[in-house]
Amino acid sequence: MTHHRLVLLLALLAALVPGSAFAQDVGSAASSLASLIPAGDAAASGRIVQLFGIVTVLSIAPGLLVMVTSFTRIVIALSILRSGLGLQTTPANLILISLALFMTFFVMSPTFDRAWNDGLKPMLDNQLSEQDAFERMADPFRDFMLSQVRAEDLRLFSDIADTTSRARVEPIEQGDGEGQVVDYRVLIPAFMISELRRGFEIGFLIVLPFLVIDMIVATLTMSMGMMMLPPTIISLPFKILFFILIDGWNMLVGSLVRSFF
Image 1: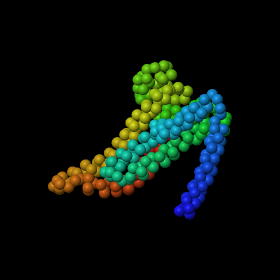
Image 2 (image 1 turned 120 degrees about the vertical axis):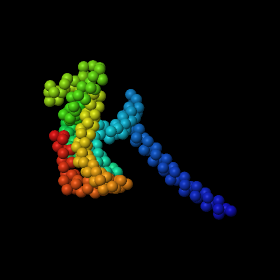
Image 3 (image 1 turned 45 degrees about the vertical axis):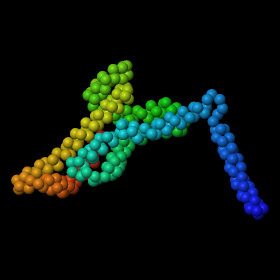
Image 4 (image 1 turned 90 degrees about the vertical axis):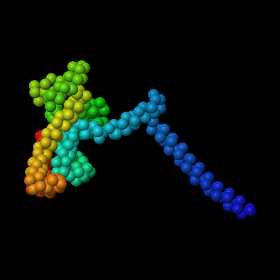
């Protein structure tokens, strides 16, 4: 019995020693963390608010990049191409989204380079304040959207805003877009519906030859009395063959990229 009590006592001592060391490490870590936050003036609350703001910006960053870049037009055209071919899951969504992202990076690379060189890099080098850096980083995207947005869409949201003169914009035909001050709540939705319109215009041109092939196959099957045979079963190989023979991917990707320049 004494032997068992001795073993239990040694086990408790062995468990308490690392526990005390761990508590000492936690205390030293807490003191070092407290030394990073300056005392007074609610510095800890300010750091928490800054951290919350950074997490919020990072969470909405993908959506912002989709709204102010060429991604919308590209992904719509690729999706309509898949529907026009009659393929439901080929190419897969992962492939289409990845291709659209890389094409977006290619189209937007001058804009990204300008935002990095004019805004983000000087801010990281402590040459600009956060407010000035944000304005310089936003200017390239503003210029890109102004070069792509339609005047009718811009005028529509400018009239809907109906606020200060800063939220309004003169007809874009009067200039090349430079020097115009447009509120982002007016510019971004106008740019998005302009991209949706152009994406569907490109999609119509993509689907039209496939629709002709479907009509020809449907007419032939009806004339041959094959009422129960779905025409899409026969037209699908011909549409894929037609798309391969005209080098469709090269034509489509090249046309999409050139439509932004």
